[in-house]
Image 1: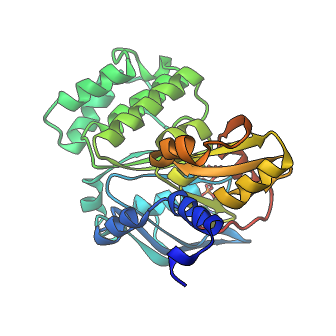
Image 2: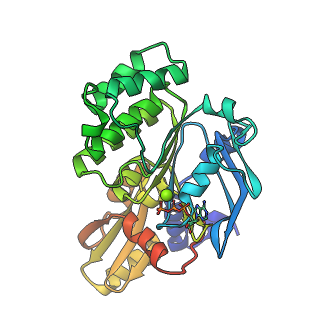
Image 3: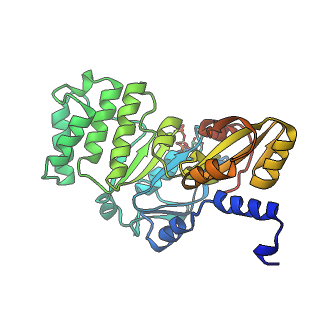
Length: 333
Ligand SMILES: Nc1ncnc2c1ncn2[C@@H]1O[C@H](COP(=O)(O)OP(=O)(O)OP(=O)(O)O)[C@@H](O)[C@H]1O
Ligand SMILES: [Mg+2]
């Protein structure tokens, strides 16, 4: 049956559904053509007694910010330590820019800056002394990027590490880790234990690095920083990846969901039939791509007896807490 011969209601529904499905094909195609900056392939490290990581696989593409979430003891740091070449895989492999993380360790380090979860600084050196040592180790001659970092983190480097607060130690570690301006940043819970102002400084740093095209792996428990920065997110639980999601879809960056209330049940039913979406008790839930919003309001809603409209914001934290607390296995979306 041709589209012309379909009943009007079915055609209207098909038209709306067409515009409700966002096209992610081009993003996926682009990813498939590019070499992954980080490729974690069936990585397994069995510490015994059910501890460790098992068959962990994911890829991070150049310019992506990849969130790595999971409860305490889930396996985030263990995975990251493999990326950094600190530990050998039991099974599987890790490559960084196509280089094996274990065997090509020194080459890999040229591409990567790493901020560990627990920062251990030498005591009784000034910030400057520590930075100079890091510069020499990294063979960094150009101070330009270092100056930007110092300005961004607003840190007094003349202070001795012994007298620095946790937040300032973390800032110093960030400056030391990234002063060589590496193209890949590995951040293991960079803001845990920091106050909201300090967290914001870190989020601003990640956003500005993302704008500069950096590839970032961010392990985190802090939802606002994940929401503000990540393109894709993997959730690890009990050493296994249980979900990989596209943050754009979760956060509805490219589409909006509305609850529509109508003057009566008949109007609600008719809108459900013609617009698609889901009738939920006394209202209709409809998701509309941002580029179709004008058409939706001016044409699809025209003449309908809408009495109220709410935008429904996706709750990232709730979504992930569901994972943390239950044995739920979500589909990859
Ligand atoms: N060297 C080791 N020897 C034995 N077990 C280990 C070792 N390193 C980690 N583990 C265990 O492996 C599991 C994963 O630990 P990991 O530190 O990777 O978790 P995590 O997700 O980083 O947790 P957190 O959020 O608390 O930092 C835990 O059960 C931990 O006890
Ligand atoms: Mg950890």
